[in-house]
Figure (tube, rainbow, N blue to C red):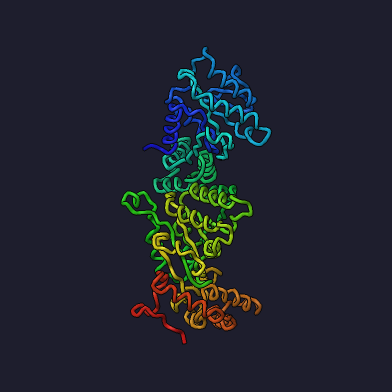
Length: 524
């Protein structure tokens, strides 16, 4: 199977044969990319050489070539032009310029930029037998405007599954024979490859080596932690550590949980072979404090993948164009990470400008368009989970069927859910062994939100601790509940309007207590 790097190398070879004089490769991985570029140059009948400001020109083995050009970028570009024009030279060469990009910026780089531009204009007319081409290696694609018409920009792909698998196999093969058989079972191997998707080749190799040193095995968790550093390095997303209990930490929401569970394995090779489309995302709409954000955090644990928070509001900037750049950068990181859950909290606030006549200069409208396009086109395995409290603030485009896989409405918890929430909250405070009548506590919490029910457990713990640190009782929890003024009373009008909107528009996340009539039982 052809890897993405091999496909990129084939494109480079075609561009060289077409006599493109200037290629701009965007990558952080010099060593991995140069190996592919050497092959591409050879297939196009070019000799490849490298250049950097430390040692000047070197061949593909790294041996310096002191007789060609020099360490100064201006002198090097002049040497390339001279070789292209010199009738005594019959060598076709590709020059991989490692450190040229910083010398092309601002006024200090004006002379070098002009030299490169002149060279790009000259090279296409040189005789075929002494054709020359320049490849600039740079970590970003910010090509100077003066060179935009001459440079072909190519963003080099990150290692795909086949390349990551080869790196893993290489790490295992370096072990003694007796350790190779124990180092990585077939099931763990697939998890280790999945965990490394989104890392550079060097990062993946380093993680595998570290895991082998620390655990004498390939531990996917060691590899996954490296992705946290990747996210922190870019500064446009937040990494959240998933909830250890997963969906068990969420009381109720049985319909939503069943839907998520049915899509858990939709990213596996078997699912792809079956023809199953990968899930795109879900929008959770409902009353504040009823488990929307908690569910988003729990999905990553249930699915065994990283959790990233995309704060669209935080990416906005006062500088023209910077907000859009930040958003593109965030989507780039998401695609780099690969399989992950992307959480967008309070979506209606982040996109408020898109429904207010461009009150923010069109930034929110651009963000909405970019988000919808990314969800439509992305195939890297990201699952977008968005939450919203006020549907009136959401643009109608995002509510259309097909944007998200499903639109869910999360209401106040039913009696059955309240019992589950009480038990889940007791577990989260290490009180699962205490004899508590969860049904009586749930009855005392009629019309409470999930967060209001969860909050009475620490309140009861404070009361019990103040009385000689005794164990909490059912009476403590009921007493704590009696002091709560629930949101259902303070925002009854808003909740009624939200329920009316959800009727027929959204799928309910909970099976009603009275499933035969579809009506909710009231605790009166």
